[in-house]
Length: 204
Image (cartoon, rainbow, N blue to C red; front, top):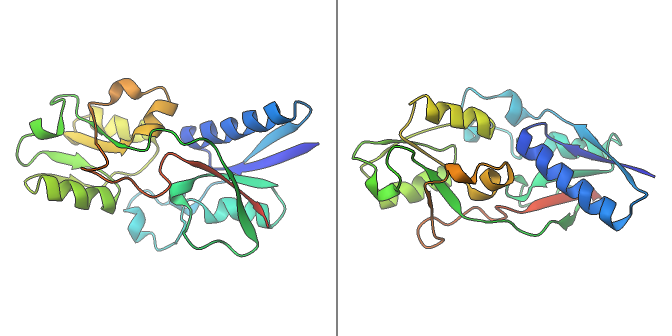
């Protein structure tokens, strides 16, 4: 039997899909698992904040559509990207064990959030993160950042910003934990619901 998993094509999305595939193969060594890569609206539109794209589930709708129209048997998602309202005809079938759910600061020149100088530029694509960080440090400036983790890190390394906030789990899964300067406690920055969880959807 061959089971087809729909996924985005970013390195982190492929890591997640391969992790699900490995879990399925452990359960049934005879099972063949094949990945079906899907390009989403969130992947195509990179010149403006995701909140302005105007599509709910910009990173998930088209991946799930591959399941609905029969191109794939299940879909793999970052659970935090899924809409809170279930998609008709689909079900959340499984999750992998949760990773580190905290948000992480990358500030190679300063090392910690409190050491950032006034007016320092912090990059984050998340309105949630921006609101909580601004409450902690209203003196900072915030800019949007899009793209996969490698693209974002390249912006940080080029000096386009002084610091960046990303999900700790994504960095750890890609072997980039050494880039983390500081991990925010839940009391300081509450992560997104479902952050660090990999979810699998299938036809209901």
